[in-house]
Length: 408
Image (tube, rainbow, N blue to C red; front, top):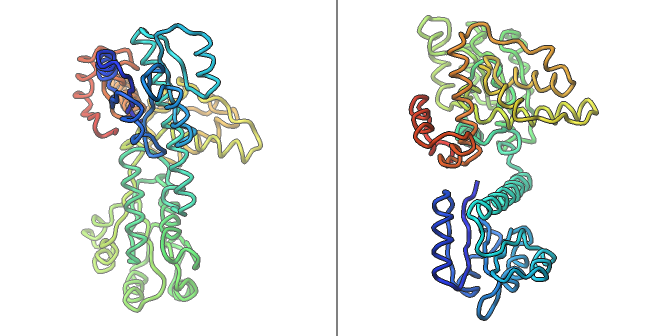
């Protein structure tokens, strides 16, 4: 989440004191002594919020508010005054100010209002980003969900593989969504309007493969669990790749290099496929994406069932993040469907393979990750949200090898 605050006040002492207060709270104050100094920073690209005094020589806070809303109607502006003037406060709110505070104000009140404004700004910017991606037709951004570093890396891998036009090996643990990634890869490619065919590799014989290869060109052919392809077809596929045809996307949930070392898979075919790879992270590797994915799946399931989506409370999220999810996204989607239908408590089964200490450690690590993700990697804010002393919080991060910068 953005943390920038454009602080505008003509009184240098007040400006410095407010900037220090914001800095101590992990915010990023950008100071200006007048509207003229501030105006070049104000626009749709400014990711933060504005905190401005009303009474300033020349152009006052109301002029700044009007200028800001002409530049970006959704840019939060918080106005300050030392006058205690109720009509002025009413005028400020009527003019569209996000909030109005009287100087001197308690630091806790000031930070609380700015925090709400920053969250509002972050949502606005996120919605704009998503709309821009939809308008730009970026299927990787539209169809691969999650805000973690690992999810963004996955989107980048898919885009690169799609642009390359090369045969691609998509690997991941069971339930990570290999077929979905293969489809997104096709949609991201220049062949998006050409055929996309998917088949289970073990279901093919030579005649079916030859027909499928011919029919799919010049589109994309996805063969799931490529390790189950018969030896004769492995040789035929390697030859077909040399001859040209559709672009091949091969999926696997097993380690093909191990299969090659055992002689169970053609080394020649493996090394052709391994040139361009997309590796899907497990949910355990990106726990901060669990709430994002779950909310999306619940909304999707409720819409399909014609139901109002149920409330997803903090307790629900905490419970989800305490679980191991060996079934990955597929298991989370199933849980979301049950939750949307009101069946979740009846079907929830604890993992019998973990002892109490391990489960407690898993809960603690997940809650730390979630707090860091929500705080945009700001450790002080995450510690405050969890009501932990800063030293205790950092000790726990070290224990679980969590780094705040990985969540920014």
